[in-house]
Length: 103
Image (cartoon, rainbow, N blue to C red; front, side, top):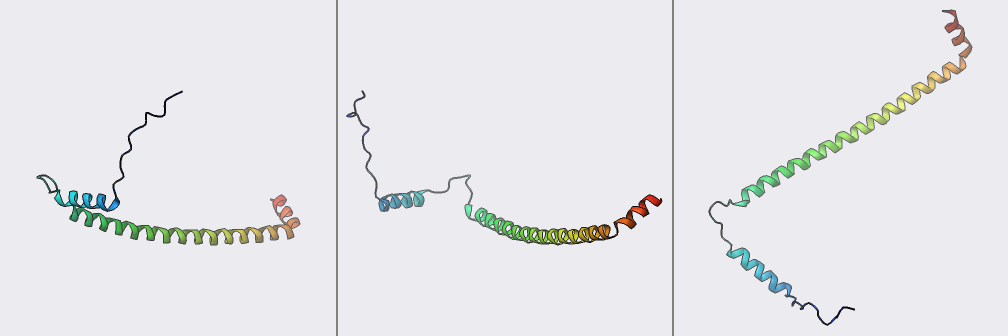
C-alpha cells in the first residue's frame, strides 16, 4: 500500500488583488520591441469587419425568413390546387374515363 505521507508541497494561493497588480505591472512594463506592431488599428479593423459580418448575417436571416414564408405559401397553394383537381377528377370520374378511352 502506498505511503500517503509523501505528499506534494502545497503552493500558497496568491490573493487576487496582488495577482492583478502584478499583471498590471507586467503589462505596463512591457514595451514594444522593434518589429512589433501597434495593435489598436488592427483591433479597430477587426471590429469593423465584425460589424459588417453581423449586418450581413441579419440580411441572411431576413432572406431565409422570406424564403420560408414563400415556400409555405407555395406548398399551401399546391395543396389547394391538387385538392381541387382531385375533387374534380372524383366527381367527373366517369367522364374522364370515357375521354381517355375515346382517344
